[in-house]
Length: 412
Image 1 (spheres, rainbow, N blue to C red):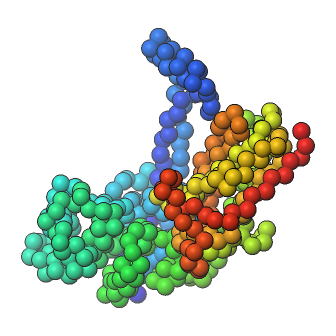
Image 2: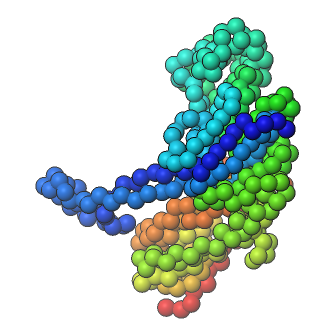
């Protein structure tokens, strides 16, 4: 390893969040009355301002030729850190010292001009790095071959699929001569063959003396590629060191987050917990069990309750959407005021990555409560194939067979 090429000192990023002083849930009539009052009186809403600390007092350095893995749960600050390092946004405090040119692959299509063709965007990316046109030409054929977009090279990239965006973006980042490469979840899009090529290329880049910061929820890829890893938790540096110890720390954070209590008196859903085979097992793999327990306490009785879940991936895309009525379980004779509904998915049809669960509660009278991002969980490697799931075209999501539903009431 060489000298430090990245040095971060007491880095912080704070966002100001504005909100209006309104109730969390209102009827349509209340919404219409409030909307009318806005025209009558301009100060109907009282604006509130709060702060969100995405990163707090972060200090570390990265040596030349290192591959550093960044891991942490959703909202931990990983993407924010890469945006600061890539100069996409400015820090609120602290400073960053970088030695060399930086190439970022942070989101699908980052840095592309949608109206320009693939060919033109390759030269544009080189120009942004300060490279001469002749320098870009030397790598041009390798970029096009790696990305596999020969037929669409002179097509505006706004017509590219997300997979084509990522392939071209990664090929540009990996082949143009930037000393520091920032990669955020590049393996989340694209086919298996391309993902393998990406992993191999990242390894080649590191051996060539370039420095890589790699964000991924695929812990297998982190373990395979990286020399060391950093764990972020709620915007703070929780661990920096060896891969094995970093993964151990990360799994412990996920284990501690497997139960979430809701203390609001207005909420009906009071608690949600998840586990795999055993109550103390929060290790999820493709094909493993996902057991969800939802504790409910309501002021009024829910008649024939309906509980739905939506599992979303890192990009907030819904991957699974089910409720008990999908399985012809209407709980017709159930009157629930206090109790628990349990869902057991026997073969989890999700690949490695980070996921969150939304909860929807209702009864025969309609929707009652919605909790977005109720709880997070991690799938950290692949196992069985998706033989127990199929795509429900009506929902455009994975529909899972043999889901077990149980309901327990504590009495009315």
